[in-house]
Length: 440
Image 1 (cartoon, rainbow, N blue to C red):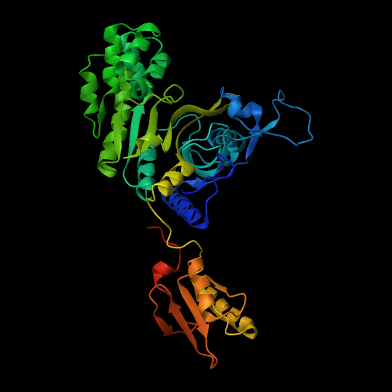
Image 2 (cartoon, rainbow, N blue to C red):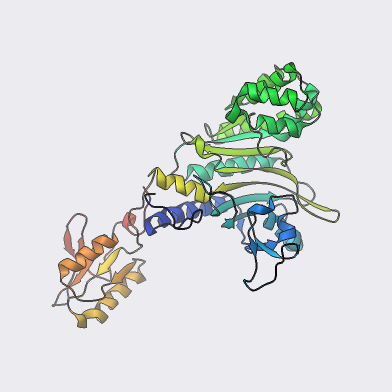
């Protein structure tokens, strides 16, 4: 993107850029619905108490109030803009449980707001696209497998190049650490999460000095984090480290199911990556992160995992598994790298010219006949010289210009090739690829 937004962290796309975003959203919507996910939309605001109930950092939450209202910072019922779609979805499930058929499959694509420092790939206002499956009391593990395959399908349908859906499992990691004799798995995960930034030796030092690990325990934890495979051979590599624990066995089995299915149904897209630590402290099983190959510095464009308690009310518990795509982050990189472009910036396929000012109504009749057959068009506002009208259509990116002659006949010109032919507004059709904005 050659220009910067006037208000940092709040991106605004030009029409051609917006067309790319719409293509991404339409593609995701199509794939999600092919997999049976129903669309919902939740309100933009929640109470502060609801948003902060899991200990989120309140300085990143945008409060909502009238300018003339008294300070209500300490009022738990005060409103704030949602910072993700998971918290409002959890509330939605609890409030509508009696009307939902479980397991409930939903997708949701909305704006969210987060008060963090704007930088490459990070915004204060951005669009997310989430899919989740939530159960009533229990949720079969097969949905963890299905979510990985759904996202692999969705991302493969987008013009983003190669990607890797990296999968790990909380039970595997925690069982391994406990089998080593490390009883604070969250502390180990926090240290392992710094591996790519500070390196092996620095992480080992943290594990020994802050977590209480021995040198041998630290080296074993680092060895686990180095395991990455595109098939289930990771199981043998973990076993070779000589650690045993019941929870480790469960985690290995669950991760094997995901990777085995993905290697058959989405080959080359999904990998077991035991270095993933971010998010494992609050997910309870499977965890997913996705990176664009060649653009790993952008971070994860799609992440999620399994919650054993996505939502609860009284004795009712609703486990869930889901993934969230950072659509705005993805779009910003697609546009910045010029990975794709829109064929034009406006939906109009035809620009209907005016021979004189009195012909405006006749031109509108032509436009109406074209629109009846699904051809987007617009009519010139004034009867300038044909050359100027053609130049205007060209600036707008409209591929065809329509002329009505004095004898009542019609011609249409493809201004890209210069070819001009006779045409009938009741039957003329452009090529299929010209009917809508294409992304290439």
